[in-house]
Length: 237
Image (cartoon, rainbow, N blue to C red; front, side, top):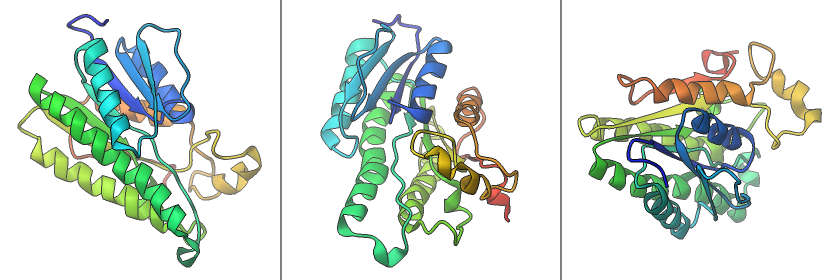
C-alpha cells in the first residue's frame, strides 16, 4: 500500500521498451506504479503492481483502474503508451489490421482514459499523457502509415480537447510525439534506414521519450501540448 502522500502512475504497454523505461522512471520519482500489458510479468518491487490484459478490451481498463485505486488509493498520472504500428500501402490494409490498430490505439486510449479521468476528477486533479507519433504531423511517403495517422492523430486532437475541457478542473492533458525510437519492435538491421528518416540522422532513445514525459509531469502550466521528440521530423525534410 502507498501512503496518502505517495503519487500513483498508471502506465500502459509497460512490459518493454518505452513503457518499461517509464515504469522505472516513475519509481525513481517515488511514485507507485500500476503497469499493464498483455505479457507483463509479476514485479518483485512492492511499489509496482502489474496487471496483465489486452488494453483494447474495456474490461482491462476497468481492472487496471480498480487495481490502482484498491492497492494504492489514487491515480495521479496516466501514461497511454500502448500502441501498435502497421506500415502498409493504404489499399493493402486488411480488416484484421484495421481492427487490431484501432482496438489498441483508439479503444485502449478511450476506455482507460475515461475511467482514470473519473478518479482524477473525484480526487481534484491529475495528469494524462499519451504517446503518439511524429508521422501524424509530417507524413512520409517512405513510411505509408494511414492507420497510425488515423488513430494517433485522433489521440492528438483528443488531447487538446480534453485539455480544454478539464483545464479548470485540475487535470492536465498532454502528448509526446516521437520519431522512431530504438525499441525491441525495430530489429537492429533496420536501424540504419530508420535513422535516415530523421533530419538529425539517428534514431531516438527510450530515454528521450522518458525525459519528455517527465518534463510534462513537472510542468504545471503546460496542458494541451503535443511535444515533438523526433529528431526534427516534424520540422520537415
